[in-house]
Length: 302
Image 1 (tube, rainbow, N blue to C red):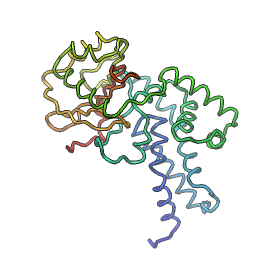
Image 2 (cartoon, helix red, strand yellow):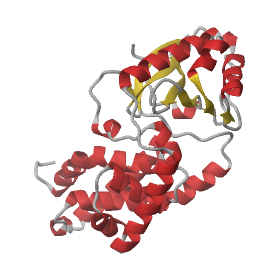
Image 3 (cartoon, rainbow, N blue to C red):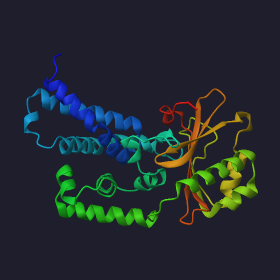
């Protein structure tokens, strides 16, 4: 095919914006598979517009593509909600994993933390879209209004409700990466060693443990577990000694220093993400993803 055709142009423009679209949609849905499906639909709509000769009318391709992706993601929410109704145990976002210290691609640097994604799950789809666009990507309310086909005043109301809801459940706080790495290493040593006393010293009294096995992996609790004593005993009692020793590799997960566990065959066994309190010395949240369907994008290179 000769260079400079409409199809070439469509492909290049979409590729230039793909990482942005991935990040926006992933933060709305928390699922890599669903995000990829939405991006495929967005590409088809974009390619069809080019094929119909309407590309010249698009003054701002970035805005046009974001609008397609966001509204396609919103339309997909009904399917996702029905799927969640039959999901076994707690549902956690699919982790975005990269090498610790490696240069991050755009979609990973803009991915919000696992802890914040869990809070965003409690918003309505529209509130979440507005929060992601405004708080994460800095879109103005008037820009969001055009994307969602809502009035600016309606968007401001959605933004206010979402912000109040999120900040009430998760005040703004960013742990120091070095501290988070140190705490994660200490936590894994205690957990794998069955050291309840050490774990109790690290856990906040109101700590919560989420284990997402999707009914396909053990050990995994069917409900979140609350309280330091229960969490410590669950961790040390459910280590599954026949699986150990696991190979612990420290990676960046949704922007935070975290741990990825591999079994003896170098298959990913789980992802462990810790959420620290504002003082940085106690763990207030533990997110363990062991559902194999959510680990397929993780490689085993050392």
